[in-house]
Image 1 (spheres, helix red, strand yellow):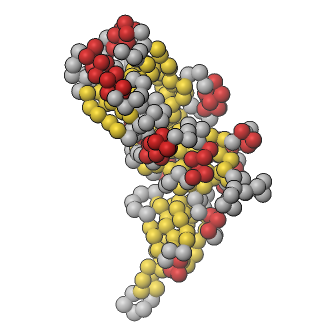
Image 2 (tube, rainbow, N blue to C red):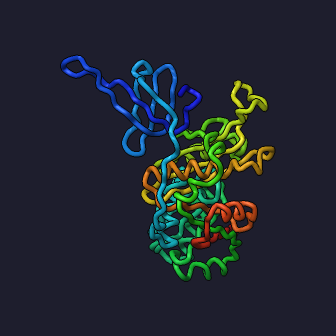
Length: 334
């Protein structure tokens, strides 16, 4: 094993000290090799804090196979409950409460992080709640989107939105088990995937939702790094097809996963146009699913726009089925 294995699952033995009679004491750790530089190594195990130590204490190390995830029933979750899990996994930069509703803003980066999560009672009449929401977003120079979930949102909300002339955009929430996901694709493809706790500049460069606006870029980095336990997957072109300006191979595919108790949320699965149809998206999903299962997740979810036929077909091939559909309702300007 060497520094090129950063991002892989490894087994490491290190010297941790000596006994009273001067015999060495060794400790083992299995997890993701998060870093290896002149300051030492850091390994992230399946539970607990990362383990960091000086390179001089390294005794033995080797890459090991992905976590052998076992099949398990999906966790119970109603639409409203899964929407709340998804909101924790994609947290907005700015949030405000309106009764049981949550107003979310992130400089316009994704509708999910710039919409009202209208679950439960807003504590005021619906017309007043929607006026408050519209004014809150207008003050930030943003359109007012309302996330409508059935069941979960107030029953009269859709009628009130219709009366105001709201435009709707449906989104599917799909679910699957991490165990079957972790076995997809071939071993060679999965071994090309590297994991990290942070999204590198080259990871962000392939993420198609990022614009050149500095405010949006800053919000994007805050949102994608938010959540209980976040992992980023990257596949570099290691077969000599060119390098970036800093000498690193170009990025071919990326993905993100956030683990929150029994649920793992997948997002930002992207493949460079010239690298598609090579199984890279499948490899990214498999490695992220294995890591999520290692942390205890037994259910996987993702959100996909209803008109994105290509993504829906990809996820269907990976075993995802639709749990429910929610709608983003765009309020007309007052």
